[in-house]
Length: 94
Image: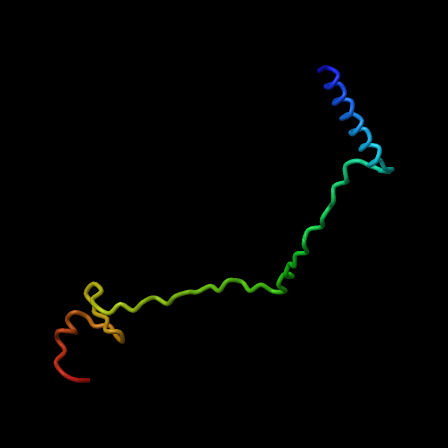
């Protein structure tokens, strides 16, 4: 039994050895190492030129509001002042 086992193992080893020699070939390789990192330039960016003249902010001054009505003892109707007595004492057109 041992002889059959050794014969089978020997035949298998011969088959493996024969197939290795049949597939043998010459291979030449040159390895430099890890490739160098690649630098990629950033995308170009367009920047608008500065404006030639920048206008200053507009200053706005509001006119005072016209308040029609009594101011103390006088009345303002938008055109003239009336005193309290003059307002009530007026009896005609002019």
